Image (cartoon, rainbow, N blue to C red):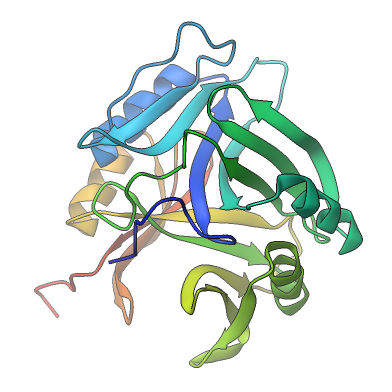
Length: 256
C-alpha cells in the first residue's frame, strides 16, 4: 500500500479534482460508485466539494459555469516551491494556464500543460496536504498520462518535478514511471493516437465487475470490460460526462 505519510514528498501525486457544470450529478455518480461523502462548500464560488472516505480527504469536485469547458479529472503534483516549479514549466517547453495562486487557508496551486498539451496541476501544501489517504478501496491508486509523446513527456515531468523516470521493464518503449524517493508515483503510457493527451485516474475498488456494473447503471459507458492483468483486475469506463477512468482491484477474478 502506498505510503500516506504527510506532507506528500516533492513530485508525488497529492490531489485529484474536477470542475464541471453538472456538479450535483457528478457527486451522485462518484459517491454511489466509490462510497464518497462530502457536500459543496456554500461559501466557495465554485461550491467545491471535498470528498472523503472514512472521514479522510480523497478528491474534490467543483462547480464550473455552463459557459466554461469541463475540467476533467486533474492530478496535482506536490512541490515544495511553487514559484520555482512554475518557472520550470515554460523552461522545459510547457505552458502555464493558471500561474501560482493562493487557495486561502489551504495552500498554493498552479495549472499547466506539458509540451504535448496534457493538463496538470501543482500544489504547494499549506494546512491542507492533499490526499489524506490513497491506495485504498474508494481512493485513487494510480495516475497515468495517455499520450502519443511518451518519452518526451516523461522527461518533461521528471525535469518539472525534479524526480527520476524509469521505463517499465515489461514495456520499455511505451511505459515510463515517475519515481519519487525510489517509489513509482505516476505513469506515462505512449499510444499511437494523436488526440490530446490526458491524465486518467485508477480508482481502487473491492470488486471491479460489481463496480463496473454500478457505474454503467449510473450512466457510464464501458470502454474495456473487466479483465485480469498483471496489476490486478481492471475495467475502463467513461463517466456520464465522458471522462475516462479506470477501475482496479488487486484481486483477480475467482473464475480464472
